[in-house]
Length: 173
Ligand SMILES: O=C(O)C[C@@H](Cc1ccccc1)C(=O)SCC(=O)c1ccccc1
Ligand SMILES: [Zn+2]
Image 1 (spheres, protein in one colour):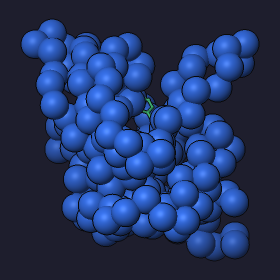
Image 2: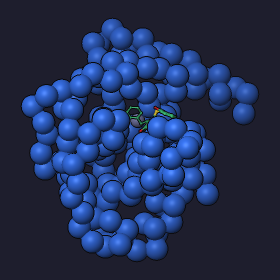
Image 3: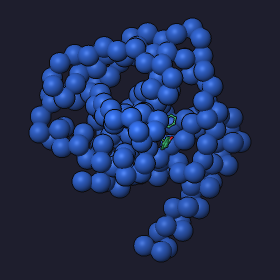
Image 4: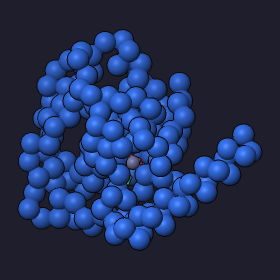
């Protein structure tokens, strides 16, 4: 089921999310809905707080083009265990801040450890868009948005635009 994506500014997007106690049917349904919501947007990642669930879960599928098979990943209670010295600059977007893009510098590679839907612990190193996306999603679990890396003026301009968008959406619905 596709769930509505919260739009910034929203207090739930700034909260520290809670760890998942156990991988049960509720978490499996959440992950399924998050993947459906991500593909529908479309996006390459989605974090649980973006659909109003303050739990430490995010999904990713960063395969660039349609020709390659989808590679959905579900990361529960993810932790960053290592980041590279080298950094990358990437023009990021966010499904909770529609149509706004800005350059963000992050470590080029990141190693993460998480609990999978299979209840097993996984550890993997990401690079390229996967690394950028994994760090962007992990930030969401700590109430951090990519605009928090920008200067105050640019962040304020984007926030003002989102407030206007929300006013307009509230009017027509
Ligand atoms: O808000 C989110 O977490 C999703 C976000 C993830 C992300 C994108 C770019 C850099 C870092 C993290 C998005 O997916 S925005 C949409 C997007 O970037 C995209 C959409 C379709 C195809 C390719 C990219
Ligand atoms: Zn985002």
